[in-house]
Length: 371
Ligand SMILES: CNc1nc2cc3c(cc2[nH]1)N=C(N)NC3
Image 1: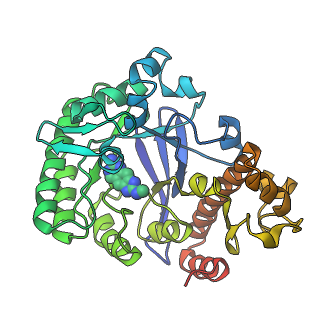
Image 2: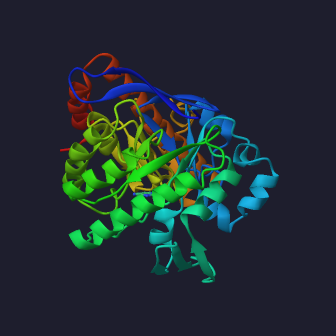
């Protein structure tokens, strides 16, 4: 099989697990954070810098790459790995979420979704088969099934019909899966905050025997306790010998709380997105470097960080670059934020090794300033 999960151990203090995911382009340790490279680049970072900071796998996006430059172009280049010069694992999202979050969308039918291009308004159509064809051309190691991503909140009735359709679409994705020996296809469990529907969705997808499962429909504006409760009754439904991927998460506290609840893989645009306006994640909490109080602060962004940015540049200098709209500024802030999250995942894995992730959560929350 293209994707296999190796369980190393489960933390004795929490439900967190330490593992390794093996893919055709190499392996990565879990729990893992996956930097997002929506348009075939993790914004402002080179592949060498991503490797230097320890990124084991990155994300690409079916929706965006289909629209621009086109999956045909990337296929002709020899696939996404060659096109972007990244020889480690790549996971591509299926476009399900992007259609519902980006496009003024028209109509969901059994066949697929009709919607308008989010940039030029032209009419478009995505289906399970089309999403699989695009990901096949991209050549990603992990493909995501094409699912319906209901808005939050949604009624039980709407969510029930949506889950049943997502299960039918998952089966169609499996049928359209051209190269299962080279690419792994993950099913996406939906069902919102309804335990019965999460159970139904998980049951349907497990019967299709995917090599990994994502938990979708979260991190869509629901309160954190709703997300944590949904995780508490969803992750135990999923097979212990396969990776569990919580889509679109997240912030440092959500990564720790997701790992504690048995999640193995995470992705989020947060680190690079907030970096672009000079907001940094540091060991003492969030820091907005444009703030006047840093004008003559010649210390590092984070005194407890040993990343390239923190070893070589000051808050004053980075503040200046960001205010002057100098591109080098967002390179430095992006590098630090990604490094911060990747190092947090290493600390989480270390805490699992030492059966103390609960204690680590207390220490981190105290220092970072979470409640
Ligand atoms: C940022 N929050 C977020 N929630 C998500 C949920 C999903 C997703 C992407 C997400 N991102 N992709 C899917 N194909 N389905 C579920």
